[in-house]
Amino acid sequence: MLLNKIERALFVSAHPDDTEFGAGGLLQVLLEKGVDVTLAVMSNPVESLEEGADKNLLLDEQTLSAKCLGVRNDIILFDFPVRKFSYYRQEILEELIKLKKKIKPDLIVTSSTSDYHQDHNTIALEACRAFKQQTLLGYTHPWNSRCLIGNVFFELSQSNLDKKIDAISSFVSQSQRAYSAPRIIESLAMEAGIASGFKYAERFELISMSVKND
Image 1 (tube, rainbow, N blue to C red):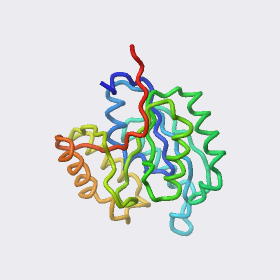
Image 2: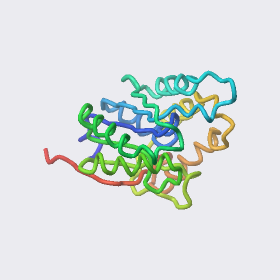
Image 3: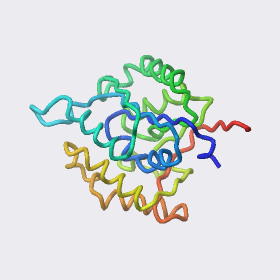
Image 4: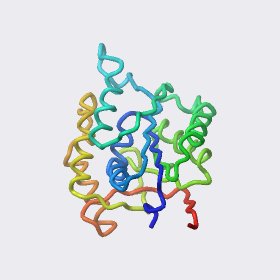
């Protein structure tokens, strides 16, 4: 089974909260199985904050959210300009390659290649280049796509779902977004569960897969 082959996993978020929405449940599942999990966040989008807000607010919320999920490693933070990732493709690629060499992940999880958001899409495409010989999954944000993406599903327990909702709720500064509502998060987990035969699940795009024969 794929999960039994994983020792180190790297989750790459274009912005704080991306991993929580797309893969907060899978991240917990991996931690529960003893996988060494690292979270890298590529920007601090202060532009989404109200005028006068603390510029570190989203990063503080990210720290609290990761704690809710059980992340024990330090979060690796970058400061690429939000909505302008496409101008920094080479620099982003080089940072991802550095992470690959440092962490040596068996699994990388990031945005889907079908995500319309310009930053998400850039991260997904550069991850394809950096991790082309490893197992790479893309998580889905339905509000950033016009098609239902996902051919890999991971079952979530009720506890996984509850912690995912708590983690997303840690981003108080983003709570005005309709898709932050707990009922929406639960509905998406139920939809993925119906598609895969579970009560709750998360769906992912399988971008590439490399599994050791041992």
